[in-house]
Image (cartoon, rainbow, N blue to C red; front, side, top):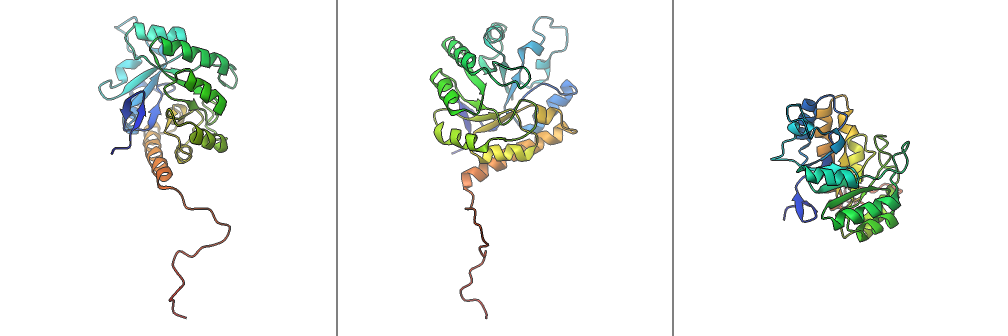
Length: 250
């Protein structure tokens, strides 16, 4: 069997999800997307030209034959996105603090409940909090997407214990680490902790070579997932010989 990431019945071979913001140009973004081999990208509807078809649009640089994309906003924007023919898959962010960009959990759960009832597939960005994740699942979320660190910080996984707990306790829907990844080793760690996927934007877009970083992230996600499936060796305080000592020449 192929080891696919399945969200709301849709299968993706890639476990890397990437954003569309902060790139130096649309052309660079398109090259990075191709290098990442991501099959899903997030699109902030507020940045998309939806009215003047004569002007260049971000959507012109997304290969929609190969890449699925989600709208990234709250209820009103989600409805707008669907009305103009964009996806009904919503990466939902309800921000509670503008300096940290931490989510407002209470309002996030309520927005998830409303959008699910209206037929949206909701992928909510949330804290690395088991109780919040449970409430989002009860509200109908198709996945839970806990942060590794504040959005755009590049700090990497700051609370691996919480992600391990979420992995063990959240089995109904995929768990996708969203926000805070800075480099390939961060992505690998998130996957080794059991994440089903990693969503990132700034780590690729603000790299000196965005295309090369996209390739690195692609490989890191694959390696981390394989490592998790393989099961790491136990940690030991003292050395353990890699070759047996019985029968050796003395």
